Amino acid sequence: MKVSDILTTSTKAFPSLEIVPPLRGMTKDELLESIAPFMEFKPRYINVTSHRDEFEFRPESDGSFTRHLVRNRISETTVCAAIMSRYDVDVVPHLICGGSTVEETESKLDNLEFLGINNILALRGDCMTGEKRFTPTPGGYSYASELVEGIRKYQGSAGYRRKRNGADDRYFCIGVGAYPEKHFEAPNIETDIANLKRKVDAGADYIITQMFFDNQVYYDFVRRCREAGITVPIIPGLKPLSTARQISTLPEAFSLDIPLELTEAIRDAGKEAYRIGTEWCAMQCKDLIANGVPAVHFYTMGKTDNIVSILKECF
Ligand code: FAD
Image 1 (cartoon, rainbow, N blue to C red):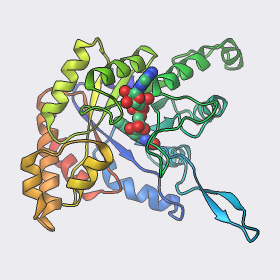
Image 2: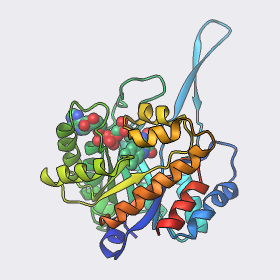
Image 3: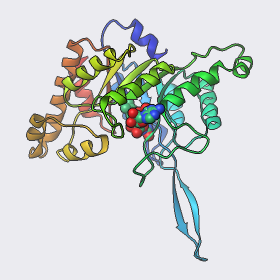
């Protein structure tokens, strides 16, 4: 089922999850067992992140260097197929601009459609390791708005429709990302929201936010988006802090604020940090539901127990 249809037909807030594909070496069964504890809470869909291939240069005996592919993770499409083979849950693979030409992106779409997957989260993608700024792949898309437009255009093209017996250009339900505390490259929140609107105008059906730790930030962001004419659902994304170290690593990695109260509670908490982070996230989740959000999306980042106890408490 498309996420847009799930959102339209749901009568109460529901949970969804994001998982990161495993590193090479994990088996399919190990992966499926790792998400089993979540399934009791009937997440409506599971997002699977996408990661650009990384290369390294190795020195040769003649002094030259050769480029080698370091494919660290199993692909999002393979993980989605594995999840579908065992669980009755919709999957949402992430599709990123980085690393693919337009033709390669179209080939990925064909593969997803072949598997019967009709949901995508369309993103520009992170910078490569060592890069400060995103470098578009030659012949690929530079922004997520171009990717959304490209997906709609590909499916609307006469050639595609002939090939697919008239399949419609809305086959894929497309979600996009947003940043309540502003994307780190945007000069200001107004410009970032204007760029978010480009994605919706290009054909995105809904939005999932970056994690945040102060719900007021989300409520203000939603208000600003509505004032800017963005009408699609804006699903809040949450992640429980699990270590004291994350009060410095998460702001750096995701360009976000951690409220003073949470910072002070967790800073010297040692092993208690896990419990405090989980309770804070559960409190955020309950408040969001009480304020009428359509769904809550959880970034699992390889953790299970904390998310499971939040799901138990809130859904
Ligand atoms: P865009 O919407 O393209 O925006 C990027 C920047 O460019 C913003 O500052 C925006 O304001 C600006 N901008 C947009 N359009 C224009 C324009 N036309 N002209 C000038 N400026 C413009 N990364 C991964 O690599 N893999 C994942 O699986 C992944 N999953 C994610 C899931 C979610 C829910 C979120 C919120 C992020 C995820 N990311 C992932 C991270 C994301 O790829 C990075 O944050 C990336 O830097 C931006 O992606 P975007 O799709 O928001 O980009």
